[in-house]
Amino acid sequence: MKRIFTKISFIIVFIIVFYACDSTKRVPNGKNLLTKTELKVDEKVISDEELTNLLIQKPNPKVLTIPFSLHIYNLGRPNPDSVFAAKYIYDTLKFKRTAKLLSEKQVYRLGESFWHKGVHTFLKNTGDEPVLYDEIKSKKTINRLKSHYFNEGYFNVKASYTTDSLGPKKVKSTFLVQLGEPYKIDSISTVIASPALDSLYVLTKSNSLIKKGNNYNSSVFDEERSRLTAYFRNNGVYNFQQNFITYDIDTIDTGRKANVKILISDFTYREGDTIRTKPFQVHKISEVNIYTFNPNQRNNASITDSLTYNNYNLFSSGKFKYKPKSITNAVFITKGGTYADFKNNLTTRSLSNFKVFTYPSIQYKINEKDSIQNSLIASIFLNPRPKYSFGASFDVTHSNIQDFGIAGQLTFSIRNLFNRAETLEISGRGNIGSSRDLANPDNRFFNISEFGGDIRINFPRFLFPFASDKIIPKSMFPSTQLSVGFAKQQNIG
Image (cartoon, rainbow, N blue to C red; front, side):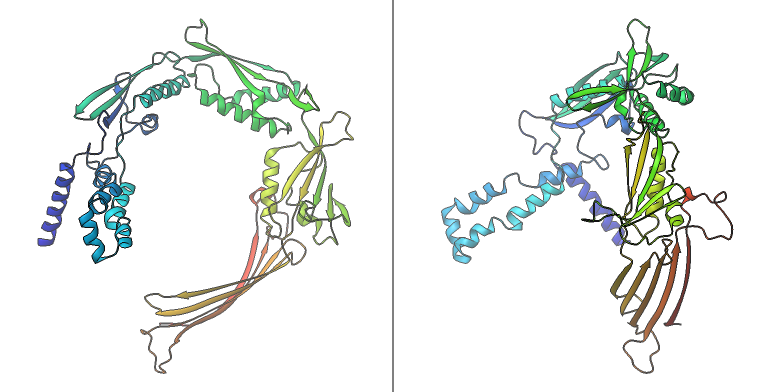
């Protein structure tokens, strides 16, 4: 009971001390401490964090209405070097007396000590310096608030601020916003220069995020631009970018209605010193080349072996070491298929899942043999990992059961074991330890032990006696792991 009373008393005294501290102690003359901010939108106080984060200046953080971090900062001296110099250096008699006890060099070093300087640096770094009211930042906050609500369709928004004194060197800042009526989307039209894009847009028009009757919101226009870009690129337009989509929004004399025109321009590119334009096209894949080596990372590497399997061209530097089916089954880009970004992502993830290659790269170029230049050659570069690798780990452990222990593990990996991108791992582990809790008639120090081994083989596909792609599609990146292991243990119980 006494301990509880002591703790409560300590907390009360602690709070009283902090309340007694002057929060404006480090506020310069002519400045004011910002102690409170408030945001009012249409006369309603807003506490939503997303909106209050628009305020550039906020008071020092408080706990139970007390700015503890500010008080901690105020405890630190602003100029400990000057105080020390005035007390020990400029006072000649005190300097001489102190130098007799220490030395002149140590007196100077005393000024850098924790007690004279370090403690004040620690307090200032731990606490928060006072937030001084800044009128320029209030004006910037007004501009930020106007911009935020303008982007949400309130084109006639009005915003202002007031400051009220809450005592000596203390002020409260209030931001007032009057929204007015929002503008709503009325008509929606399109001007699409490329016929191919116009045809694609008709198919996705019903999924548009810009809808008649909704409030104008600039973020929705950005999301629609991203959606259309992804849609076009996933349907063959591989050179399309977001900057080809712009908007023309008419709000003049429309009675708070926004007439939206979606503009999608032709493809613009540089040829020498000339800027040229041409309509976008839907691109097909005319060739898929798979290189089981990366010529960019292997100097003087050249193609010495090649083959064609299931419309894929496979190339190797040295003898081809993989079964063609094991590689091509992981590729989602197909000859004659339409270019699509999502196929690139699936192919990259699927090949990375093999664990026999580092992160693959995919490159495209226009097929120069195509007179209308709407076909692409896809090149997939695979950089093999070393066939064999060795790993080791060593640990010293301590627990409530094991007073002292030594553990180690060795792992040996073989990649592409059966030429189908399999990975075999053989590992052995051992642990010896000492426990005083274990009955130990022989008085041996190491009286706990565990030894074991594991063999694991990973197949980057689903092993089944018949075709299972319809049950588990390869886009789910199926794999099969077989493992066997043993362990011999001597332990408590």
